[in-house]
Length: 403
Image (cartoon, rainbow, N blue to C red; front, side, top):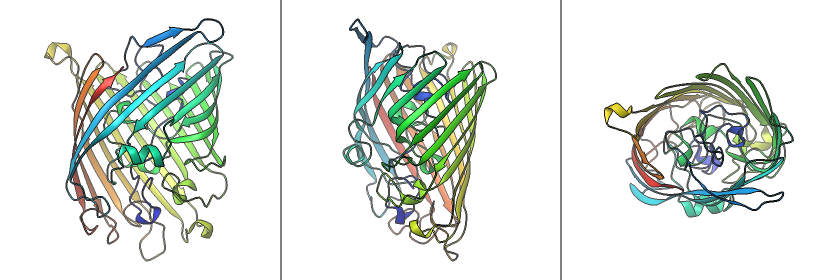
């Protein structure tokens, strides 16, 4: 799990998630293309929300050239049943994003810096308020890197980078749904390190040496290869993992996940009003007494993300309907010493999320209804005041501006 104490073993507690990295760096991505704005190809956005098509910019001239200043401000309200013993609120309101982004997007020397507050709501885990998430996870400068691009087909990034893993991005406004999903809970989100990107015709590849789950140690290798068949179809394969053993165990660096191997196969289809992204994910952790893993452990899951933008002839311009369905299972049992990666060794979970969305210009609002069901759980590791309830329903509202 991500941001809970590793011992509570409840997948992805509100912290790390994300996607395919150069979705941010615009060289490789396993998500639909960003809106047609030179300034806002970064951060990447899967839709249906779109970046401001006329962002503020200032031309400094000389070697600096044009610099763009953009950002997002949004609020969040959540309602849920069967709240966790450690986070018993059935309703709460908070900031979901309050960020300013400064970037240079052309020339051989470029940069990207994203500063501000954020919360990272995720299904099936307790919610971390923005003040705690910002302080305990990636700080007030969660993403910042320099980019050297000597050619249009080759670039190198160094700094605090989005991950190459997964099909969902880190911040709520980047994704189809407000809350990140169950598979996201096994993935890292932002890592410190260096990344190289290369494109050759329909093939885009990225390789990165990073600190994985933000451990501060450069011991993770990840790679992403995306083949674009045509304007509607692409297929991506991502893989990553720790090259050694790291015993760091903190909120942002859960020791089991930071020592995992992870693999994704992601297909993307876009045509007219439709975007459809099915993907598969496998993770494994070998027996390792240094990190408290007395037995091998693994998870396997699949997800289907889809969005439909309402046609103008329906009289619903600006309205879209994203839907996500997921299933994930974990290996082992509570009696054989398998580490807990979900809701107890051998547990399973599934989710269904619907997020009606409306955007007009820079303003947006969306509502979300989600259901998570679990089975084969360990006593005390699921939902409700005693940790033994097998389901959770949430309603979420988010509204804000993309300036």
